Image 1 (cartoon, rainbow, N blue to C red):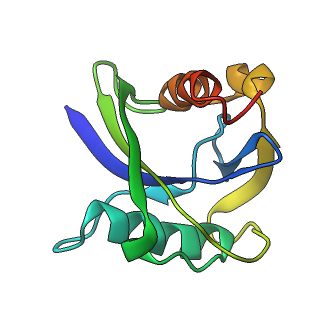
Image 2 (cartoon, rainbow, N blue to C red; image 1 turned 45 degrees about the vertical axis):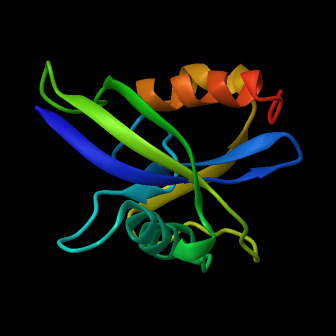
Length: 131
C-alpha cells in the first residue's frame, strides 16, 4: 500500500520547520493527503494553513523533491510518497488542530523524524539549505 501526501518545506536560518501531531512520536513536515480534485500544491497549502496557520499561495509553490520511504505509524509494508514543495510565506507558524508541537530542525535532529523526513533532511543538507 502507498500513501501519497503533499508537504511544505519552510527553511529559515538554516533550519526546517517540522511538526508533531498529537499522539505521534515523530516529526513531519506540515502537509497531508490531497482531497478529491485537489492538486498536490493545493493540498500542501491547505494543510499548512490548517496545521500552522500560515497562508501559502499554491501558485507560488515549486516542487523541491518527491521522497519515497516506509510510512511511519502505518501497517508494515506501507510506503509513503511525499511530494515536497518549497515556496514563500509570511507570518510565524503556530501549532493548530492536531499539531501538538512545532520545531525548527537541523540535520542533527533527524533521529526525531519519520523516515521520509530523515531523507528530506539529507536532501536539504546536500542542497546547502540546512546544517
